[in-house]
Length: 103
Image (cartoon, rainbow, N blue to C red; front, side, top):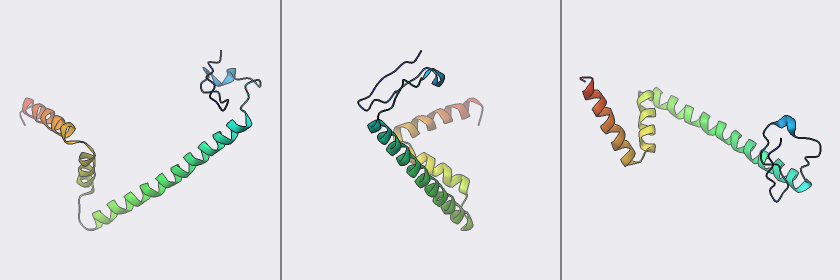
């Protein structure tokens, strides 16, 4: 059984299983164009993401070459992503656990 939700473009949004989609399930021309556009945008963004990931890798390599500890740099970047309240909660919990095991 196909569970269909049709958007204004006529795209099938969900299907319980792909084998249940029949030749009667048609994507309109406008929907085909929109689908192609979405896929191409995703592909371009994936390419951009790969370039950025490589750039980040190069920056870490540069930092390592200058004597910085990359593991610690990654930790600092991770910590800076979190808001202060979340960091404080994690720090308090870490302190609690450490004291519980005698550290």
